[in-house]
Amino acid sequence: MKVSIGHRLFLAVLLSFLAVAAVGVELVRWRLSDNFSQSVPNTELEHVGGLVSMVSTQYRQHHDWSFLPVDATARKAWLREALLRSQQDQQATPGALSPSPNLAYRIGLLDPDRRYLAGAVASPALIAAASIDTIQRPLVMDGRTVGYLVLAKSQNPDDELAVAFLVEQQRNLFVIASIGVLLSALAAVLLAAHFRRPVRQLVEGARHLGKARFDTRLNISRSDELGELADTFNQLAAKLEDTERSRQQWVADTSHELRSPLAVLRGQLEALQDGIRTATPENIALMLRQVLSLTKLVDELHELARADVGQLPYQMAASDAWQLVQHVWDGFSEKFRVAGLAATIGAPPARSIVHCDVDRIGQVVTNLLENSVRYTAAGGRIGVAGAVIGDELHIVIEDSAPGVPAPSLDRLGERFFRVESSRNRQLGGAGLGLALSRQILETHAGRLEFGPSPLGGLRAAIILKLEG
Image: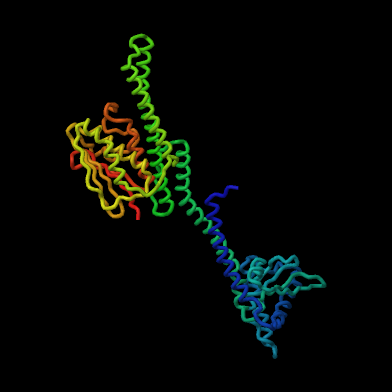
């Protein structure tokens, strides 16, 4: 069964109020209970004999209770005054016991059906809550009971004043309890309204996210936990929106990258089929290059997908990273010569042992050097240096002009992102190499950072944690 937050708050506030009331009642019960090993004999009924005679006389004259005042307040005062008059008459008798001064506030008159007639009568709820004892004395007229005098008392005679107060104020106590319940309900309603509005917004916002409406934002300005939850919701929605935008861009870029070589292949095959071109070694080599380009793109996509789900295999071991860089560097000497680039490598750093997969780190270094060779203008320079900073090994690859615009530096490493806006494939690849390199380094608890190079081009830093 669904219970709303308003009902929960109402029950919580009401139960808190009742708990406080219960503690108070229990204190009264304990105070009014018999805390003595010996019971105190009751003598108070001896003081109401005169009242019985006075009431009986008036009843006999009227044959019913019509002589009582009509107003309820007057009836309460009438019995009290009648008791005081009867006590004054009794005190004139030699040897009479002195009555309790609060007896008039604890005695009431009931009809034969025990319905209220006059005086102060403790309600059943008060009797049960405060452990009040009651003593009844029947009023017998001509052999039949015409009413009862009811006396409220405590087991401890010292607490008679407290009993008198409770009986006298029981209506006020009931009003106070009712007001407490109403205030509990009002507080619960106000609290529920205070909390329900942002909760409803959160629920509605979550439903919008479930319908792929990732532009949903909550306008909730609060300094409590609900405000923090709303801020977290907005951050989540923004992240989902970015993810969805990246997914859409990923699909568009993937289809674009696949479409270009497929279009070239289709054109070549159709030309061969129509007899426009012949199957010369040059034409076959052109188609083979497109097939190899497609193969490389699919392989890179496959590796990225495996890296995303943590299925890219790694053989981790303590290795000399600088020795690995030197080995890859040596393999690029011919490419540097053909591209007309001056290449220099710095001295080995003081420490270079890292926990890594040699093949994967070699793949990262290769990707970065290939990018430098591909984009650096002829006659330019490429340099590699190593340095130990703290407990990290920094392998820095720098090249000369052209450089990368500052707004594009933060986007390097995004999938399919290439600095050239024309998206032609003459210089760059599909834009997946840097993305895969970043994934590999993150798996090694390292990172890949980009910045402007003092040589005028791009500065790429591979940062790895040193062993020991």
